Length: 217
Ligand code: HCB
Image 1 (cartoon, rainbow, N blue to C red):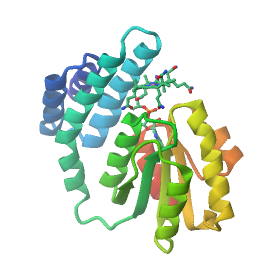
Image 2 (image 1 turned 30 degrees about the vertical axis):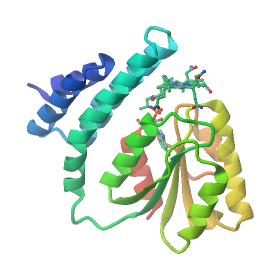
Image 3 (image 1 turned 135 degrees about the horizontal axis):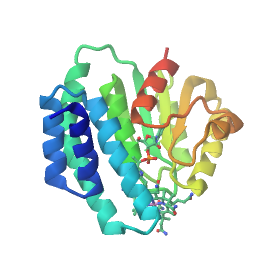
Image 4 (image 1 turned 180 degrees about the vertical axis):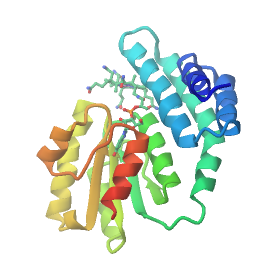
């Protein structure tokens, strides 16, 4: 099967909530020498974007979204060991503290980004979803002296606003210059990043890994 067909198969498996198909597609990708990064970015994440748009258009409902997310997890279980294997022997890049902003439980993109950063040599401290700014500040202070990047996701305009507070609290605690800050998620734009004084954003998980690696240099 050609590589594009395999990527399409992965995409379709997510769109159709096909857990077995997602597992098969992931295995076929690895067998055909498709890189796990490509399988995620050009296959699974594309499918997740399509199902997300269908949800917004009320063409699918909550159970379908949850099943698509399960299909993605099943494929990730197969792809992640290969991602990690490719990283063996690579020097650590730094600590990535990954999380979803307070009030927000959307974690599909956050998990993809965390996996991709881990696969690119970052040590990952995953704080999960609905994380208050106070917890972030505490973790940054705890790891002062290390190379640290905060990697925050927000999928709602409301939770995105508290990214501004994150930056202000880092400044108040004298920690802003001790940490790099990358924010992402659908509502986050480059203009927003510049307005609040964060360091970067990224469109997808692969770009997030590239951008974070660049910021740590
Ligand atoms: Co949800 N939801 N939702 N939702 N949801 C959105 C986000 C809306 C835009 C839908 C809409 O109304 N148009 C909307 C937010 C509106 C707004 O504020 N602008 C919304 C809402 C309102 C809500 C609820 C409030 C609904 C309700 O209960 N009334 C509720 C929120 C509860 C809460 O958080 N407190 C809710 C619930 C849900 C679920 C549970 C049904 C489900 C989440 C399941 C889960 O995550 N475990 C869900 C979903 C799936 C969505 C949509 C459909 C898809 C989001 C998604 O997973 N996208 C979304 C609509 C949409 O986006 N089309 C809708 C796919 C991933 C792969 O993309 O953007 O998250 P991503 O991540 C990318 C990218 O942004 C980047 O890389 C990732 C990988 O490529 N990236 C980063 C992500 N983080 C990064 C960090 C970095 O530093 C750098 C890059």
